[in-house]
Image 1 (tube, helix red, strand yellow):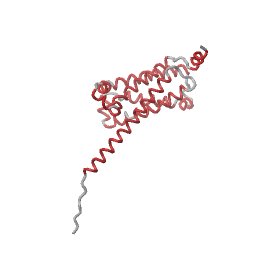
Image 2 (cartoon, rainbow, N blue to C red):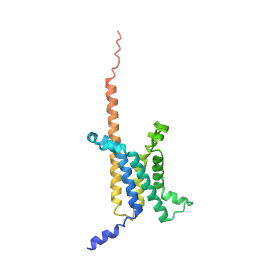
Image 3 (cartoon, one colour):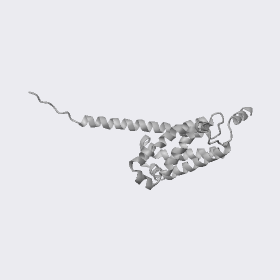
Image 4 (tube, one colour):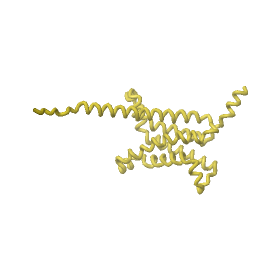
Length: 195
């Protein structure tokens, strides 16, 4: 019994802000799934899962932004931040950077922005991958020393999607190398006939 109590004392109860942070994280991860699933698990292409996720990706991303917004608002309110102290920005730099990226992505997650920004829209939305790495840092930094029951879920989820993303990059690189080597093998070198 004492052992159970000791473990329970190590874990803090999850406040609403942490629950909203986890919901933001889950929605964010779901936005990354369509491309990762198609490349890492090609057999999933035969199902409608990537298509459904792709169709609703922007809306799910907006949900991630709003959950992150309320998460941040509740924490600012609880901790009574001093916005005129530069140390505040340093201590919460990864959270602020991630939220800034989420804000940019949410503002530009519409057809008007896609048409207006054209190719730059895709480049801009690649910031989502930077947010992925910032979130690992954010969760580990802010939850160290006072884990809740949600912390391991968040760490496993963000680490899992990051590993799948890195596998996706490796597969894409392998595919490019194979295509490049196939092209070079198809090119016939001219034969010099010198007599």
